[in-house]
Image (cartoon, rainbow, N blue to C red):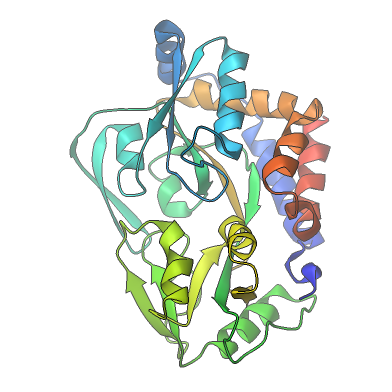
Length: 308
């Protein structure tokens, strides 16, 4: 499969530049989260073990990035294990319920962390409840199938919308795993009414269980976001294949409470410094070396903005 099927176009790169510029226009209005971190002397990192972002063994792309941020602030680093179902509640201090592209808040809950970093996709319904950093990683949703799936991966084109439709056409009538509420929601990925037999998995399901479910013949294919798909083909070589994309390009960021504007802004300044010093590129290369070939425009855009 040619890699350039997933390269970002110039208009997309321009949109990224505008988003980054907006994020770097720093506002110091609400410093509550920052002040508490500095008073406590500890930065609490909420993380969900996922792909190579948080390994669950004390390392990962997000773990190392937040550790560097803690050093930048001059405070201790503390990892706080969370689940996809609870992580936003653990950040904002309100019990949350996620349905299709909607997050509802309820009774007060304990605040357990200062930021979320684990490959968190920037989605509109999440932005209504939490603040996001600058985009720190590219993403998108792909369909991954067993190696013996009867259809081959799509033939790449320069039209991402065309590639998405070609991918969907290949899985019509087949069972495709999806999870409502997040980036793997079928409503977000054009699968509703498409003729695809979507099998909804429980929202609390560990995303790392999706490929094993396909290999166990619980479905024919699964939706996976880009980083997890890369990990999957590395972990199960020869057993799975990527058919193609089913979403437009997406971004991942670090999540903060709405009261933590200054902490978010400090992270953005730290990230700019991290990029300029080459630390960011080295970290990406350590955990996701193939990503530079798939999304070169993203990293070119990040470098261009951070150099200003």
